[in-house]
Image 1: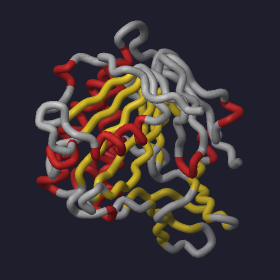
Image 2 (image 1 turned 180 degrees about the vertical axis):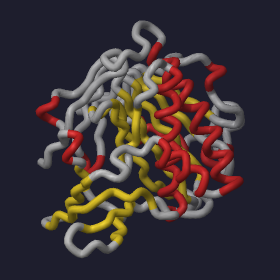
Image 3 (image 1 turned 30 degrees about the vertical axis):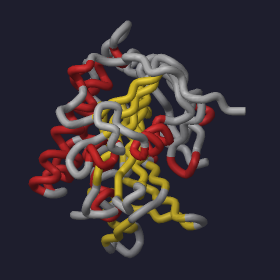
Image 4 (image 1 turned 90 degrees about the vertical axis):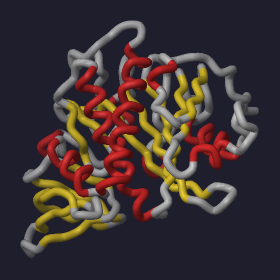
Length: 283
């Protein structure tokens, strides 16, 4: 039997919540993404109006927990979530629908890299589509998922996790893992709260620019910290594997590569990506 969520507790300073947003902080949950979806339909504490109606179309809901008992990554992979790391989800209105919502994952990735830099780690790089690496080891990951609320509106529920004090055993991951403390970043009490606050600040700023200017500046920011640009890459597509050189992102955020053998440009919308130079292993 699964227990209900723990009582809310303050995990970061209140002034880290961007204006017009709502925030829920808990000691532990099954999943911050599940909590965010459920909270959108719940009544807002101040008005009694459903939270989704209060926040639509330009607010957002942030859910942060000290521990997750049911965290997961892409393709439903289990992601261990012990206390001491960052577990954060932001539910973001997306009037443009799921297609535009793909772009929000890149907003989140850039925000995580900038937040890590604020905490002393300026070597973080973004691996397409949603991993954050430092010196080839995974320090954080993102999981953007589309959600339709009770009025039929599209939200992107963007889960973000970062290894601050702990990292999963390398035998359970596709490539090496690391933590903020191991790579020379900040350590000690308050780091998780500070990192969460910085991520929210950068996500909010990124969303303002995305809404005003579109995906182009987000794409440019991503490419400045993209991992593996110009390097050999393998992409696993079901039972097939495509090899080539990673060229960057399309204007829509898909992966661009020059295919070995044919020399033609190829666009990848989804797949497991491996950079041999980074020591990544296939499952």
